[in-house]
Image (cartoon, rainbow, N blue to C red; front, side, top):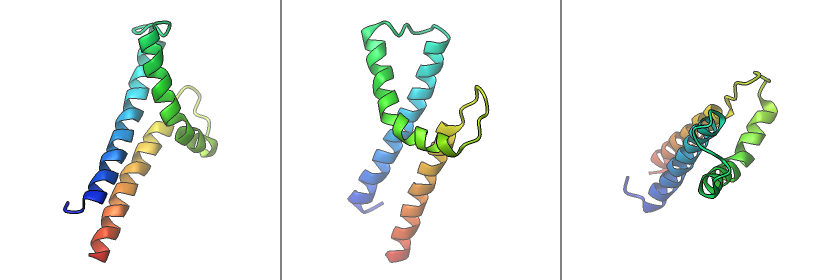
Length: 96
């Protein structure tokens, strides 16, 4: 990719996808008592990932059916981000 602006956009989207994945794994580890959320460092990581992902996830959850304990909103968000990357690349290729 020769456009540095597109490279930066793709890197930010990739970083956000990793934050979503870290949030998912982190929430599982806290739920199964592998991590103790009363530890200040563990709490800071969990709080950061929650604050970074919750605005987008809550909007998706509004339109998702209730599946009980299964939350597929992160999967939907990751798929939407991948679609956004592909759409940006497609639009750039159409222009250039």
